[in-house]
Amino acid sequence: MLDLSALLTEFSGDPLLFVREAFPWGQGELEPYSGPEDWQREVLCDIRDGVLDLDGAIRIAVASGHGIGKSALVSWLILWGIITYPDAKGVVTANTEAQLKTKTWSELQKWFRLCDQAITRYFKITATALFSTDPKREKTWRIDMIPWSIANTEAFAGLHNQGKRILIFFDEASGIPKPIWEVTEGALTDRDTQILWIAFGNPTQNTGRFREAFGRLKHRWITRQVDSRSVSISDKTQIGHWIDDYGLQSDFVKVRVLGQFPSASSCQFISGDTVERASRRQASFGLSDPLIYGVDPARFGDDQSVIYRRRGRDGRHYPMMKYRGIDTMELAARVAELARKDLPDAIFVDGGGVGGGVCDRLQQLLVPDVVEVNFGARGDSDHANMRAVMWGGMRAWLEHNGTLPDDQELIDDLISVEYGFTADNKIQLEKKEAMKKRGLSSPDCGDALALTFAFPVGPRPKLKETSPGRYHLHHHNHHQAQVDYEPF
Image 1 (cartoon, rainbow, N blue to C red):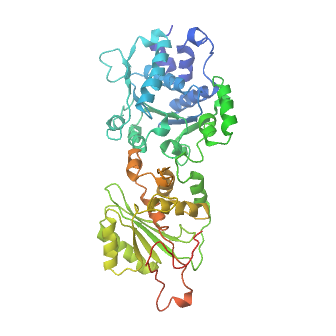
Image 2: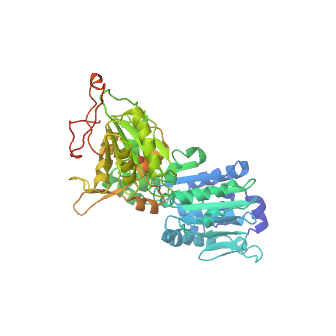
Image 3: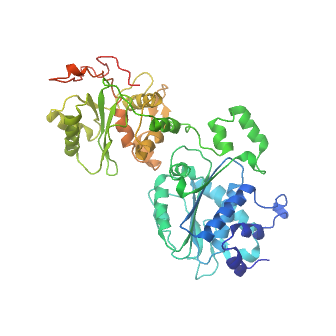
C-alpha cells in the first residue's frame, strides 16, 4: 500500500514509477496487462526527464492512430500530475464537449477507481473535477474538466500557479481552435514553476496549432507519432481491413493507423504539399508577363488590408503589403503610390463591403486599369461564385510552377480554406464567417493573391511600344481577355 508522503517524495518527478506502482498490473481488470506500452513508457520518460531538467515548460504532442491507449495515458498523467505535487492546478479539455465527458473524463474515472485507494482517499473526483479532500485546499489543489469556448477563454487565460505545478491537457487536439492555444500560452510565463502541456490526438487536420507542433513550431515541442500497428493492444484485424480497403498511403490510413497528418484534409481546397513546393521553387518571370495587383480591403477590426503583386509565375519578387487600422482613403492612396512606381497592368480590388470605396477613390485619383471584383458574383460551370473561380485559378497556378514568399501568414491562409459542393455540384469555398467559428482568421493574404486571378490579363507589349505611353487593359467585358495569356 502506498501513502501520500511516499508519492510526494518518490514519485513527484517520475511519472513512470508512479504508473508502475499505483495500479494493480496483472490483477483483476488489468490481468492481461503487465504495464504501459513501449510508446507510453517513452512519453512518461520524456516528462520525467523534463521535470528533472525544469528548463521552461514541457510541451509534448502525440499524433497517433486509433486504439493505442492514448486515453489511458492521459488519465495516468492527470492522476500523477495532481496527486504527487501539493497544490498542483490544471485543466483538461478536448475537441468537443462530448469527447471530453464521455471519453476523456470517463477514462479518468476508471483509472481513479483502479488506483491504489491509499492514494485516492486523499482526493475526490466528480463529473467535472478532481481535487483534494482537504477543505482548505480543494480550490488550490485540483484539475478541472472545461469545454473550450472562443467566447469565454478566461479558464485558459488564468492558469497561473507561481512556484508550483501547472497541468494542461488537450485531448483530440486537432479540433481545438487556434485562439484556445494562443490564450493557453499565457500560462507558460510563471517562473520557477513546473509546467506540463500535453496535446494528444488523431492527426485529422492538416492545419491548425496541433499540426504546427509537428511543423513550424516543432522546436518548442517534444513530438511523437505512434503507428497503431506497433502497439500490442490495437485491433490488428480492423487495421488490416482499412489497409486493404484504402491503401497504406491513403489519407484515411495515414490518420487512423500511421499517426501521420493527411496530404490534404478531406475538405481542404489547397494542400500543404502544393504550398510547400511553391514556397521552395526558384522565382522567375518573363519580360512580357503582366504585373497584376490584388487588393483586399479589411472589413473588420481584427482583419487587415493586403496588397499582393504578382507577375506571371512570380509571386515572391514584389513584397506583399499588409496594413491594419487604415481607412479606405489611406489604402487607396497606398495603392496609387505603388502603382505610380510599378505601372501595373491591372489592379483587381475586392469591391464587397468597404472595398467599393477604395475603387471609387482610385478612380478619382485617375489610377488606370482598376477593376472592382465582386466575390459573390456568378461563377462558371465548375465554381459557384467568383471567389471560388479565383481560388481555383490560384490553385492551378500553384500546381503549375507558381512561387510564393516565405510568409507564414500567407501559407496558413492558403491551406486553411475548406470547400464543399452546391446542389448543382459546383465548388463553393468555406465562408469567412465559418472560418472564424473554427478559430481561424479571415484569409486576407490568400484572398489578395487570389484576386490576381480574377480575370485574364494579356501580356505586356514589347519595350519599344511602352514609350511614350504604356499598355492599358481595357475592360469592356471583364470575363473576356483581349489576348490569350497562360499565367503558368
